[in-house]
Amino acid sequence: MVWERATPLGDAPSPTHEGPSERDLALLKMLQDGFTDEGIARKPGVSIRTVRQLMADLLKRLSAQSRAQAGAEAVRLGRL
Image (cartoon, rainbow, N blue to C red; front, side, top):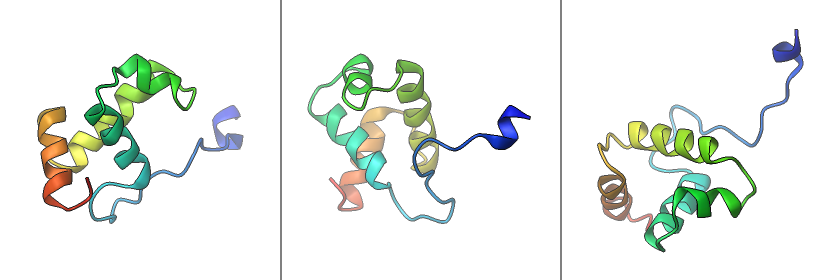
């Protein structure tokens, strides 16, 4: 019952969205700037687990096998 009444945290990227969302770009930019998962989590005040899940989802959507490859794909798309 609790899950049925829950309100999602933030906007989830739509599955038809081409390329990274603004949230994804913020994550990639922080990685580019040398932030660790812990540092990224502190910025918006989320858990490390949330950051890791967001990164895993981003890698999947970008068909990347590593964070470096995700960054390269974002550069290729002209988003970073």
